[in-house]
Length: 327
Image (cartoon, rainbow, N blue to C red):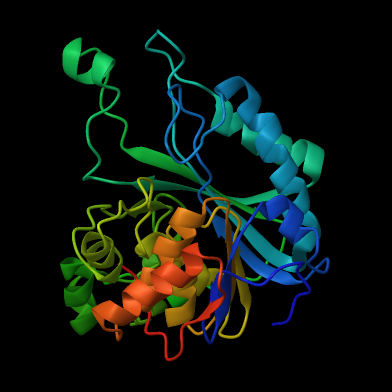
């Protein structure tokens, strides 16, 4: 994986590299049709400015469209673009913004993406929000679901759902042990023909497009490293299991995974664990330096301090023997 960027990465590992810079400018230097998967969570279109830099709702869709155009050019024909977007309210009133749906329509209508499938990430540990409508006035339920759009360049992107099977339910486990006791092959009222193959053990159940994943990280290399260094972690991290699901389903070992809004580099960390090549970009050198902590599980505190300091001083770091922990 050799790309001719105009700068050294902030740090690299055996499998990938993290760059500090504008991902639009850096991606422009990558060959067209060269990436297998872009997995990212951009700053959301929130009403109040956040420390990690979000755009105003009215400008957000136009802003994100430019990234979509660039991703479309750089993806391989069978590649995918997975975009995690949180919801938002209109300013001053308890009605929802439609920005993530405008993103969906414009990505498909203007850029040429296909919607391979829509997913919904349900975070049961998400705090009640917005406070005004949920906690104070109690006129709205808490917002706990993000939309996750799976875009593709063709109607037939590379995908294998058998790589992300879920555990069978207890009832299904009993059925598999003694299928004759639970059902008989027949045509159901719905029209489905349930044959003897229904009782076959396929190693797990097909997952649904509702992904229930808590985002309640409380320990691990990243946060413990931040605490040791006395720095703040990125305030908008997604859990490792979210990119893990899509990386497993949409890529193979050796494929190239890119995160254009790298943040704390959860995507790169998961890709490293799964033997994928990866590249991440982020504008903020402080977030970039802290993200290196995800690859320092085998390092001493002094080594971690040196890695972090060198990145802040813009000395390219190779994290030799990087051990990635996806927390």
